Image: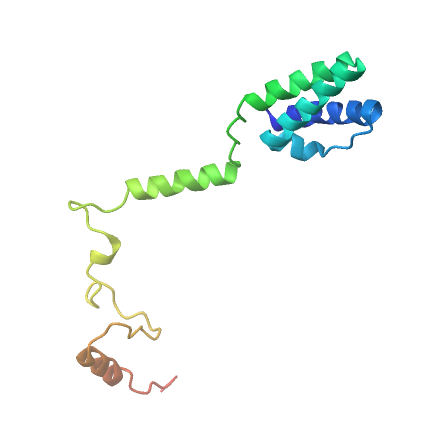
Length: 143
């Protein structure tokens, strides 16, 4: 049962208990904590039998019935569902043994010519760094 219905029943029982017995309860806690709700229903039934308030017993039964049914699984927000679907699709399209991944592509300068920007030296060997230093001779604009 949705939690808003549980809160509504707990609020109604709270009002009845406050008016007829002077007992103050916590409505939200009653709607979420099963043990607290069962204790309040026990108290309400005892007062209903003791003082003759039939409506307390009826609402105690309703609260106990709603607490017995489990909460519906909360619906995930649309953004979370879409993000999960994108992750699943990415995992399904991950490179396998027959398909090369993005890191297995030949990245030598013959395939990708020099861009004109300073190239990264991360992971380069000493010989590659030396070649880059030699190629990085001073360049003059218009000259």
